[in-house]
Amino acid sequence: MTEQSDQPLDATPGGDARVPVLAIVGRPNVGKSTLVNRIIGRREAVVEDVPGVTRDRVPYEASWNGRAFTVVDTGGWDPDARGMAQRIAGQAEIAISLADAVLFVVDAAVGITDADEAVVRILRKADKPVVLAANKVDDARTEAEAYSLWNLGLGEPYPVSALHGRGSGDMLDAILKALPETPPESEAEVGGPRRIAIVGRPNVGKSSLLNKLAGEDRVVVDNVAGTTVDPVDELVELGGRTWRFIDTAGIRKRVKSASGHEYYASLRTATAIDRAEVAVLVLDAQQNISEQDVRILQTVREAGRALVIAFNKWDLVDEERRHYLEREIERELVQVQWAPRINVTARTGWHIDRLVPALDRALEGWETRIGTGALNTFLGRLVAEHPHPVRSGKQPKVLFGTQATTAPPTFILFTSGKLDAAYERYIERRLREEFGFIGTPIILQQRPREKRKR
Image 1: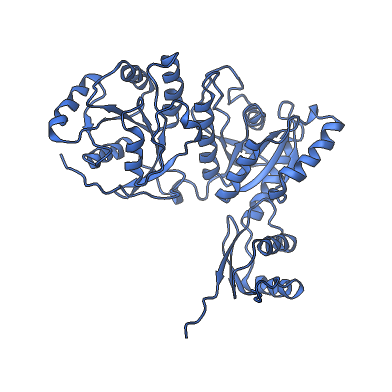
Image 2 (image 1 turned 30 degrees about the vertical axis):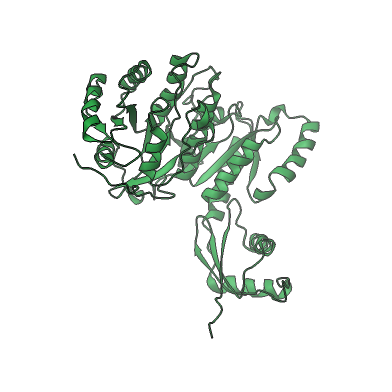
């Protein structure tokens, strides 16, 4: 057995959205969060064993031997909590259904507990690859105790010390064997159907919309507690073309254990947005625009994806609601005024045909490129008409600009000094007025000129 050093494992920030997912499960106090931090190579996972902490957790990107994967910490399970079996089943089943493989962490010093055996029963039903980690094996003497975990029937236990890194290399090698190989992005995604993520809060009509687009009931439209659906991409014919819809409607809130479901629903949404080219945010036109809606919008912007906003259930909106909705849009959607908006009724199919033109406009804006000459002519005119305010006796200027990439449009501005955030917003607004960029975020990167040293 190869011993590992105290050094953290390599981590890949912001890795490929298509990398496989590893769910880490186990009861409290087995060192699971410490092991997560060991795997990702930085202290990000909260080392706390209170059930429900997963509400604020995020997926972590990591890599080992040149292969990237996403680590999902499912939080600890308290064996003394009421309804332990239900809590274990509720969180573990969702985590496992979303994962490509599972790392099951057991405290080797304590041995097999009733809670561990309850998780094992779920793992056997799930038919997902499982790697068994016998944690807190800090020396050769306790390594022998780890092999009693063969009795769990999950195969070879890998003795590790999350605290010191001992044995973590062998465990990670086993994890890579359990995780599927993913084809390069260029082989799997580029050149295929355009990828559209349908996102939004529960019960806004995402499933109904996808079913109406597909022309059949492909997604379960049901709010019964515990309904979960494995992530599935749907190929749909619309406007004479094939589109790949990445559905996020499969996760339902489970009564009395919403925190775990909300967490995995948000993970599912973020993953779908990362894989997509355009996100369609479905809002219930009857309800107020919520903080959760705004968070999803922020996720789309940060991911650099194109955006279309669909107000669903429009047939139920009266004149008074429309008046207040316009005010909400001005207030809550001010950061995404550039996104095409459509009003639809997924249940009846009313105005569903407006989705494809909106998607086309968003994709066109997302892939728009401006020539360097045209861009600098525009920037020169902009600076002449509206120069940057003087700050502390200095007035930064835009010297030159270039569009580095599309999807999303990304511009590099070479300046004589750092521009104010307000002036950056002014440049973005004028870019949209001049060149369109409908349905896409714009990224501006500044390169202030360095002062020459005398």
